[in-house]
Image (cartoon, rainbow, N blue to C red; front, side):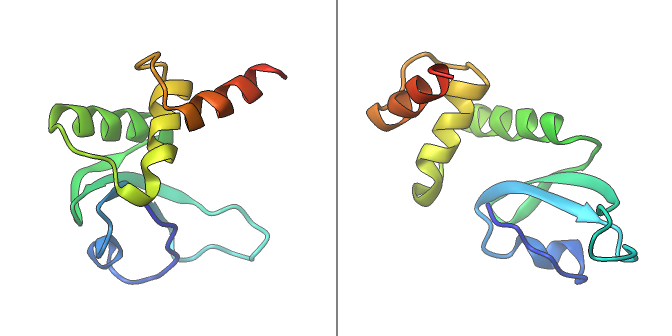
Length: 111
């Protein structure tokens, strides 16, 4: 799960990406201040694009988590708590949280 900015082919951007969402933008973006023109999102598992041409980010997230669940995959070790937070706090898929994520959830609920 990395942010990459490049004009190389889409497939080159998935190297070393265990799982994540790839955002494909137009190459001819005007200025640095202008918002990028997003063409589509793609879901990546084990360096391969498994779902392409996803039109919006929430759908891409739902597809990513659905595939992780259906394929019984483990989260990348370095992103374990990020994925757990998205799954359990923001998507409400499981009420049981690790101590670290529960602490974060409690802090969010204070505001």
